[in-house]
Amino acid sequence: MNSTAKGDRPHIAVFGRRNVGKSSLINKLTNQKLALVSSQPGTTTDPVYKAMELLPIGPVMMIDTAGIDDQGELGEMRIKKTKEIMRKTDLALLVISAVQGAGEFEADLVREFKEKDIPFIVVLNKIELLEDAEKAEPISTLKNFDKFLKKFKLDFIKASAEQEINIDLIRETIAEEMPEDCSRQTIMGDLIDPGDTVVLVTPIDSAAPKGRLILPQVQTIRDILDHDASALVTKKTKVKSEIDKLENAPKIVVTDSQAFETVAREVPEDILLTGFSVLFARYKGDLKTFVRGAKAMEKLKAGDKVLVAEACTHRRQQDDIGTVKIPNWVHSKISPEIEFEHVSGREFPDNLKDYTVILHCGSCMLNRKEVLSRLKEAEAEGVPVINYGMGIAWLHGILDRALEPFPEALELWQQDQEEIVGVV
Ligand SMILES: Nc1nc2c(ncn2[C@@H]2O[C@H](COP(=O)(O)OP(=O)(O)OP(=O)(O)O)[C@@H](O)[C@H]2O)c(=O)[nH]1
Ligand SMILES: [Mg+2]
View: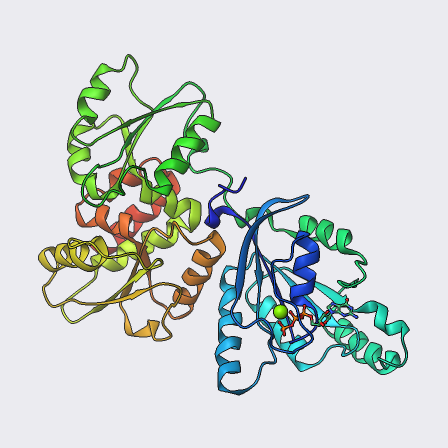
């Protein structure tokens, strides 16, 4: 189970003020001493990720965060990091101390969860202290907690990480509340039938990792096998001869997007052809959003600025796709005066408005929630987004073909084109 890709695990994050018992609760939920616990407020400083098995759900990613009431300049930075975690949170636990009750910090978190559509569970921790009148002021605490619950119409679970009260109930509630769509169920199972053959084209060049296949290719093979179909994996130079050898035509050919152009020439027109990046645009994000991004690419003109966003911080190749190849193609196809700026890693800049379009990487390291959050942020700023693969398909004039297996997206793309033709 440990091999379940990070991006495919539901992400459960724990939020709350300092010292309320967030780390203690994670340790109890996971039955492991993963997170550092102490009576010192501010023990957890950076978000702590742990991929693990959480019964009865299965493989998940648990995230411990720094307290939302941290102080000072460092504290502010930690709060910012904690809030960034929300982008990828499929389900949140809001931990409140029974000794402190709820206040503005908790109200703020609830407002943010609601704004970001994050389902959450309220846990009133250290409940055993309520019975100890010396350590708590049960009446006033419960009064403000009650007001908070009423204000937001919330339910809650009484718990104690220390005395292991209701830990199982929290696990079960997590399983119940986990949104079903936090990961799409299949990469291409809906496109194939049992017994079909799918041809996968994976270029073995200097960009390919030594001795292995990249994650989206491996996941696609697994998905095809899960649907009782067969995968024929080949290089771009062999794709035609492999198809010719088959007794029955393959149901669909999937290629690495960098080989799109060559492969499109080799694969007969009556065989469906798409890219891993189109499959993953759908699996991780939203195909229609990227189709709108393609429309924005059509309208690019000299002086426009394009943001290239890469989610991981890998070492760049000389002919790196995001920093070199795509800008070169855009410069030669549209205008040499289109400006490119680059960001990589976890950060998504605040100045999205400055860009005409955002070109995003394939997001194989991000979970679906984070991709959707990024798309939502861009949409709120009115900036269209497209992923690398679909951008490449458009730049090479084969987006129509790559979208053929997805009638709704194709229809939207063709409508958009007609609109453009209509305008001109
Ligand atoms: N009495 C009691 N103490 C608890 C309980 N849960 C945690 N604690 C104690 O509360 C203190 C803080 O616990 P942590 O788990 O470090 O709290 P945290 O929310 O992660 O704190 P920060 O990382 O500083 O934000 C520790 O001394 C814990 O032993 C509980 O249910 N009851
Ligand atoms: Mg902690």
